[in-house]
Length: 120
Image (cartoon, rainbow, N blue to C red; front, side, top):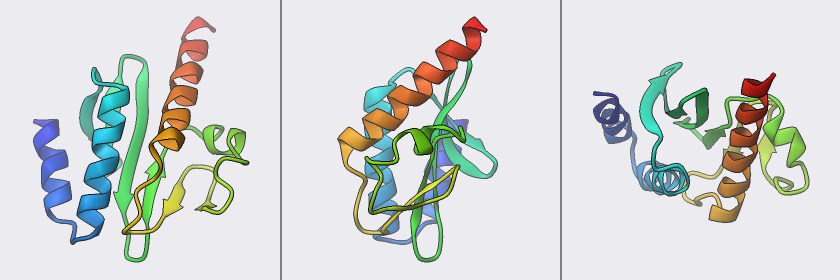
């Protein structure tokens, strides 16, 4: 059911936002193919055992990548220079997908955090 909810979320988003977010979706799924696609806090997200790894959302003038951790983006400050961001979301243009190497770093850092949290 959740994959269909993510499909419905994307279907309601206008182009070029939809195409850009679909590309991000495929990138995340290529990195964590076992992730369950869900809607979390009203936004598409990717959950693995232990928690949510990543999410995304469309807004009027930008798109957002959500690491579901307040420490992922500050830890990658030099890699995200040039993007607008908050502690919990990275904003990017509606027609420019995030580079796959950057998405990979964010996903891997979040997975590493989740493994560390489980051991604590």
